[in-house]
Amino acid sequence: MRATIFGTGYVGLVTGTCLAEVGHVVTCVDVDRQKIEGLKNGNIPIYEPGLESMVTGNHAEDRLHFTTDAAAAIADAEVIFIAVGTPPDEDGSADLQYVLAVANTIGEHLQRPAVVVNKSTVPVGTADKVHATIAKALAARSADIAFSVCSNPEFLKEGDAVNDCMRPDRIVIGSDDESAIRVLKRLYAPFNRQHERFVVMDVRSAELTKYAANAMLATKISFMNEMANIAERVGADIEHVRKGIGSDPRIGWHFIYPGAGYGGSCFPKDVQALSRIAKSVDLDAELLTAVESVNDRQKNHLFDLMVRHYGSADALRGKRVAVWGLAFKPNTDDMREASSLRLLSHLLDAGAQVTAYDPEAMDETRRIMGDRHGFELAASAIDALSDAHCLVVVTEWKQFRAPRFDRLQSQLKDAVVFDGRNMYDPEEVEGAGVAYYGIGRGRSV
Ligand code: UGA
Image 1 (cartoon, rainbow, N blue to C red):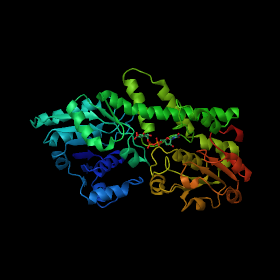
Image 2 (tube, helix red, strand yellow):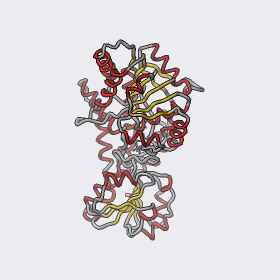
Image 3 (cartoon, rainbow, N blue to C red):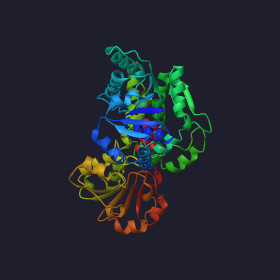
């Protein structure tokens, strides 16, 4: 089948590439000429394991095309995806200007009946707006061409996006148009093997499903961070508590890891947008507000632990702090809403010197931090420790899992580790003569 995808961000690029991988002919459209030229030459704008070889392979075999020519890309597409960004506007609602601009472009250039699919995370009711926008643009050129607008939310995780896309746990299709549903089922048939993954529903339910999934996951994290803070104060260890509750299948092991707060391009934005959606229908979504504020507070937590250890924020002046991990989570170079940024800003404001290292997010950090006074990047995790008084681990990259604690003891002038992801065994660290602070580990306070 022939599919066109608007937007070559995470969702668009990964979806387009995976559709090409199973044999469809895919055209990815973006307004960013430089990005498109780069993609044609195999330059992938994001770090995503496994993606690069799939992009270049499918491009070379002529199944995956990149263009800025929207008109040509629309002309012969059977399915047209909208996968452009929906950044938060001033009040936290999702800004639909890019989605509706694409809808207008589709209306201006549609030549044959097509199924238009909203893949971006969009407020409930957006499919109707997209439909109206396309219809208006078609009417303006007196064109009478059948089209349908469906919702098909995306559930991929950065760092594991290719796998999530090739082996989805569900394929949600929101539509009440039987023929459009048939078209999408045909398109996704190669991903629907072994067991049934299609979940078909009305458009609005599909739109809400996406927000509900992310809000539920964010709620689990904030809940665990809240428990961690309680554990810390009552002298309990949240890691024992986590193991004690995760084995209950109703709770489950996933997304119950406390830490330095959730970040990324989805949870913070989507929880906020869902609150706005609730507000727009006169509902005060108190739970969502709490999820957000617990997370906001959690992003200060590592710094608070440091202040507790050193006695005051002032005592951090002149200290050299080694920071391991900057990306909002491992296996990505994405720094959006990363907890590390909050920590860096607190440390630099307090007059500390920071030497940081991340396996992938160095360029991105350089771009964001510029030449901020007191901040530098190290060439390796080990180099970051040079001259440092203490170490803070913010992102749980695999390579940070097993440091030599005896070496840390001799290298770190104040012999103290702040573990923002509970990667280490406190007894092992302390056994090597290094003071240890984790998240919700009351025994160490
Ligand atoms: C998230 C969802 O997991 C995807 O299902 C969804 O499709 C995606 O948003 C989206 O809407 O596009 P992503 O933002 O890539 O994916 O990252 P996650 O792996 O969910 O992690 C989000 C944040 O939560 C990270 O900062 C991570 O460190 C934090 N986290 C995660 C915790 O603090 N504790 C946990 O137990 C799990």
